[in-house]
Image: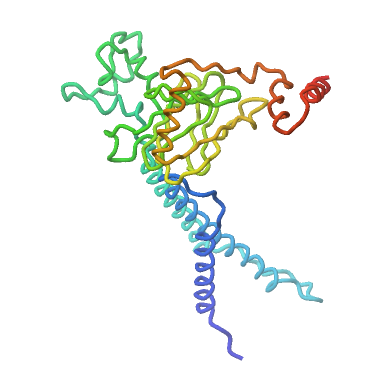
Length: 344
């Protein structure tokens, strides 16, 4: 009986593994719905990694199963195994292939990051995009201490702004996409994180709110700040997340592509009630968004008024849980009793 040549078996195995990996990569359904222009970029990178991971899994596990069956110990066979010392070409191959994969994924991920605006946050670009007189700042000047150069000013931020203040004003995060840095965003929202709530200020419209509304299909710019501890602003359906750091401005910029209601999640452990630090993002049609703005501007007197909010960290467990108990139909006295019993 003739055996199938090893080269044919290897070719067929490679084709089967490739087809299965491609199908799994394109049909894994592991991520939530796409709701922003940035989401497909992240999903494509994720799918590529799933394809590669599936292929590696099939090859490694398939080889293990094959060897377990083919080289198992037969009944009555008490002989030693073959004295195999190594295979230099094989070791070169299984070192070179992962190296190429890691380097390729690294280059691809940097391109995705750049396409999402990771290299063009507004604050981070300020000091580099302006230069008076066409001169360049030498590395020695940048390295100078503030004591040695107390009057050093930041180009592009005004002659009266010291370099120290300019450095503090730098922002990090996701800015405009390449080629669109000069365009002003259509909507700007100042986002404040605190234990354990999100507050949203629309500075151009004079609206303060605990929920965020944006119109579909326009550029939205978020200025993120924290008043207490480290938080993280995460929109799973938008595939964007950014740390919110006390004393350090960060930002996000996105374009929503699908109307609906999406969760805003704090993705950084920030205290006892971290799991409850959530808000909602409403992506509206332009006319619905304008109606919402008008309604809230009228309700808030048409001007900028400070929002009054209690810091949940200052509340007792009973006070914090009372609204949730009411929503579930639980009597307030029972909630207070349970929280008091838990405290004991």
